[in-house]
Image (cartoon, rainbow, N blue to C red; front, side, top):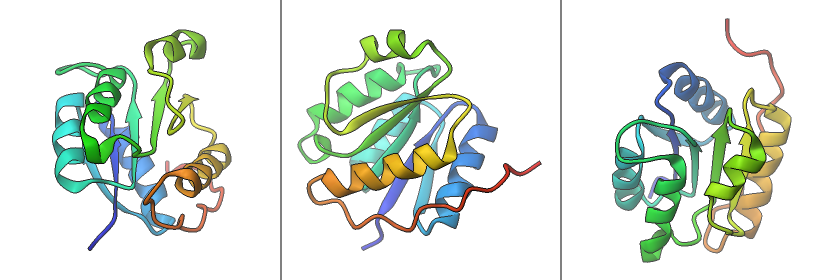
Length: 141
């Protein structure tokens, strides 16, 4: 059975960039562009990791998607990284306190994100061993 990482962002360029980085690290990636679609895909695929933007149109924010996923028994401990351009303290106040959720600011710090993925996959119950960390490279032009 394939193990998926779900990348969610209404900005197609950001979704593509994050997806390419994760795929180059050996992950299988699928994408969604709003919180509603993220929940539907997470429920169907049961990803080993979700990387989501905080502010998106439609069903709700990344925080709303996290809350909905936590109500689903088989998504309660899925590691989630929330990306945001918001003030990090303000964004943290919108998220539930959860040992498997991490908040990261934009622009992304790729070495930190790689380490965060490694750390989350080590502590998450039932998560697969982490793929090798992506090599720090320059973003595509």
